[in-house]
Length: 150
Image 1 (cartoon, helix red, strand yellow):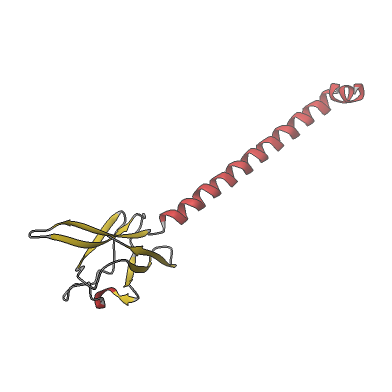
Image 2 (image 1 turned 90 degrees about the vertical axis):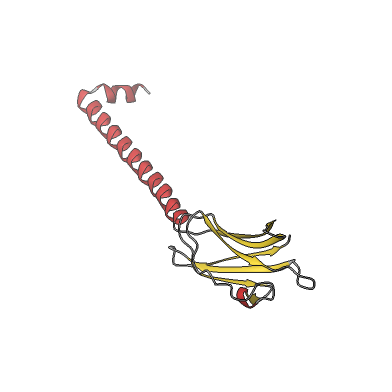
């Protein structure tokens, strides 16, 4: 141990050791900051480029009676495009519960919703299997599946 103290007692060696330790500390700190920044920015890119769709059946008062609605929510940060909805294995507009003349909506903006009027009738009642597919800024096709009930 005394040899180590004697080695550092030499002013030339002591200054060199200080410079080496300082340089190594700066390299490690810079590397740590760079890795942390890459992890944060990489995670943000993934989450901000994705639309997140979900759906629900809702019943609300209409002008003469209760009205049933299929609501599609986009909880994501970007627009969902090329939306395709299958209800009970059938394209939405071809399903018996969707009134004729309904217009298909192909996009939903970030943090917004769209809705369709649904005619729940005798012999045509939920539960229904629902599948939604879409594309967004990530470039990947995404999907959401659920069973709808009232």
